[in-house]
Length: 331
Image (cartoon, rainbow, N blue to C red):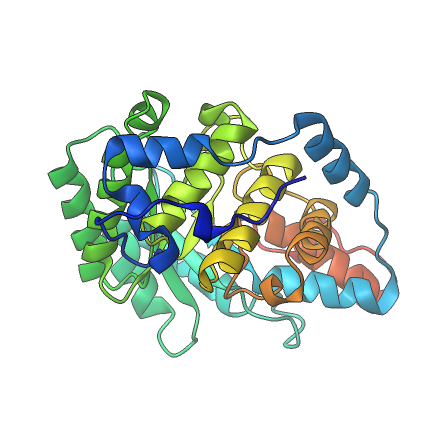
């Protein structure tokens, strides 16, 4: 469906891209060069992508493999609350659930991260101290991204100052869709700089990008600018995470690593609510990029309700019957 790019075919240039790898340093030297590169990426076969995602989505996982997959999915969850009514108490409750998702079963793995607004990151950090669970904070005027760059960078500095070790930023979709690619690139670079040691997840908001070709271009743009993860969605726009768009993004990180040697993670977010949804994504990961990405270091689920269904399915495998909804906490 796509071809690994040959970096040897790119013309020489002078503008370095932080974290991109030498083969692509030249493509960000000017707006024209970046546009030529992004529009020169192989086009996505829409029918082929949707058929392949649908086919992989029918794979059946049974018994011990299913148990492993459920535990792996739990360990990949970024347990999220991003509401205007969020309170310190709600964040502490979420942190307790992140530490011990199933109070009746100490063998259930902890989640990967708790994701909150930046002003509540300090609460999450305190509540998760010593657990090894990451604290992710959304920034850059999430979810719209409609603010001046200085305001966006201040948002990042605030979240990092509050202790967040992962930053989920949104790209300027208006700039991207207007073809102002270098503007988007420079903003991601500036945000990455403000992150310091914190990992940067770049949200593409694929539902607003409309086409798979745009999703592929935005994926490459974010990776060239130094993203540690590329993320489908804010969860505030429909459609959010879909299997075909996740496939396109997985192909992009695969090709980027083949060309540069640098591995980038993927985070689908929004609309992934059931164990069945999660397992479809794990199959997609395994079949597209391989086992190297089957780790919370490289693949995450942005979710709030997914964890409860994973826990109920885990209880079913362990006890032979489904627990009621009162067997898991209500987020």
